[in-house]
Image (cartoon, rainbow, N blue to C red; front, side, top):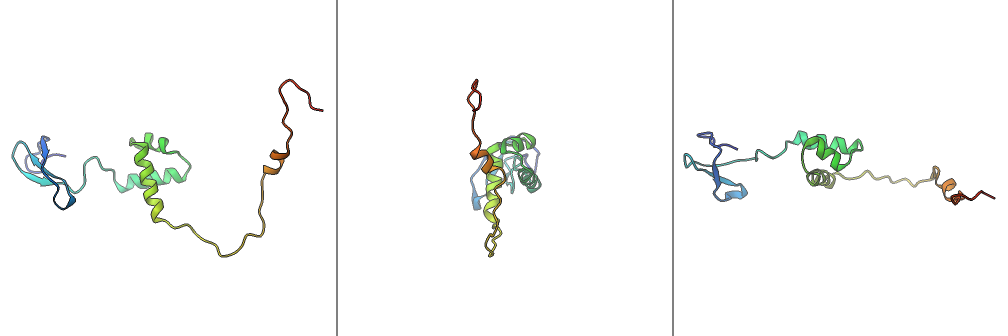
Length: 117
């Protein structure tokens, strides 16, 4: 973030009025505040992170693609998830289908080198 007056990159922090960081240019002694840091990611980047997460990518994969920390991606997703309410159904469930769980549980396990009886 450069000085808006002289475009210098040398600055120092000069307090936080109204919870916004204020800066002082070392070259021209101009005080300025910045609404959004230059390192802050746009809402489009956060939206693409959400889309990738909903498609099944993990936090670390998304972080590598977007070149941010995986913790940052996790915080974006949880912040969005707190705002969304899950759909609720008033009807009761009548049929439950257990795909292959029953056959897997009842399956005999063989030991290595031993034949089945």
